[in-house]
Image 1: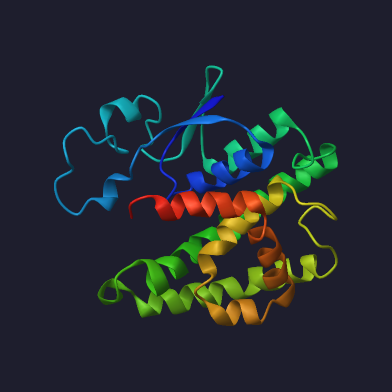
Image 2 (image 1 turned 30 degrees about the vertical axis):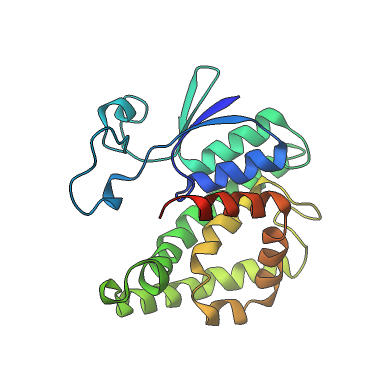
Length: 217
């Protein structure tokens, strides 16, 4: 059993999805993002700036995990670690697949997430009066090229690494999910849309999202 520091409404969702796919038990310590509090943080609340959490992750971000004495940060690295440690069909089958999984994970983090998170914030997550339409439009424009790249890739094969669902699909899907409010991107990328629907139909994803939805916003 590993310990997960974070809440479901965060990038911890990627780790939870993978754990549920693999049947890995974990203990959750709810650590809330400090920036979610508009005013004074209630006493006793463990958040990303709490001294006790900063001892775990001095960067002050969630999620982190502790696994047999090993402490890891960065959600996309954590999923790759857990997949490799526990093996099974979600893990890369050989060193070539491992390289591809890392490549697509880094691609998602660098080419997609800086823009997809802006789509999420400024087209859905923030209250309408706080949304920045120019930032949203710029993010959608920036995502057009990565969507084309992924669409061409998935037009040739059903999943990121080939013919089976792996940790690479979890990592990329969780980053792409943030761009769902930008309908035009998905309409222009039918292979990406079909792939994401397949990923989101998996029982482990449905379980993870049910836990997110049940958590206080």
